Length: 106
Image 1 (tube, rainbow, N blue to C red):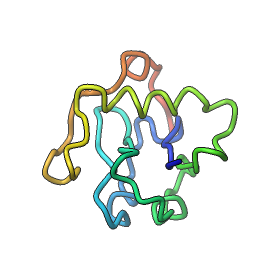
Image 2 (tube, helix red, strand yellow):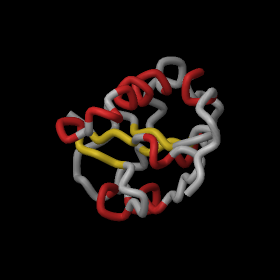
Image 3 (cartoon, rainbow, N blue to C red):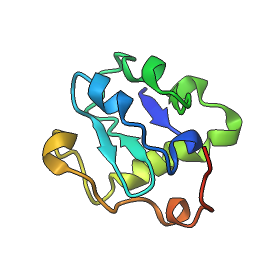
Image 4 (cartoon, helix red, strand yellow):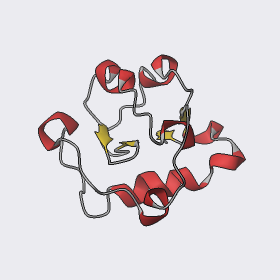
């Protein structure tokens, strides 16, 4: 199990979660942030600092955000598990359907 970032993050990318993550497993796409499940230690530090409440424990992911579990998986299909978001930097690995979402207003 891991944490999943969902729709409230799209086009916001507050990054408070990145600053809080002790293992540097939150990666930046063009439109949202993603958690690398193999690198996440399930500490939960990211969840309470998210200002839009976009981060959910996988088992607590609301039904309306269910597809975001797969978005997080798809983001890492080509990127793999690089071993740290800071050294990787922002990427353009957003899944096509995330890229196609209408602009989100916050």
